[in-house]
Length: 165
Image (cartoon, rainbow, N blue to C red; front, side, top):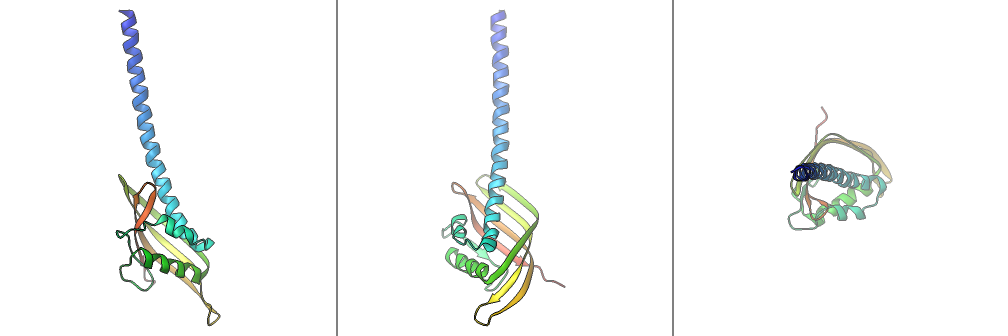
């Protein structure tokens, strides 16, 4: 009887430890997803600073489901190829590019995530033909929709400018 009681007590302890481990793994996985999502968004904007534009294609889903709206013309809904081309053009045209993300909110729904935040982008818009430049500062809002395939990829971007009054 004592042996059976000892076995049952150890089994309960083992099950409790296993359940606690599963709970911790789930929290770690969720935190890991959040960190991965933040990394993807930072890679996106860091491309403007480093001018390493190859990463833009790696972090966005090259698929017919991809779409984007921009905070600079053209304002129409764009597909993957057009978006990447315009992002590359924007980032190479702005020297001393910098950005600041504030008030981020990340919501994860299984293999889909929504990241919304306020954004300030600034730098020198360079016209290489006229050898002129203009300081720019764009205050705006951003929403990124990401899917996990198997890593987090951007499937939709919506950037909107906040008018300065």
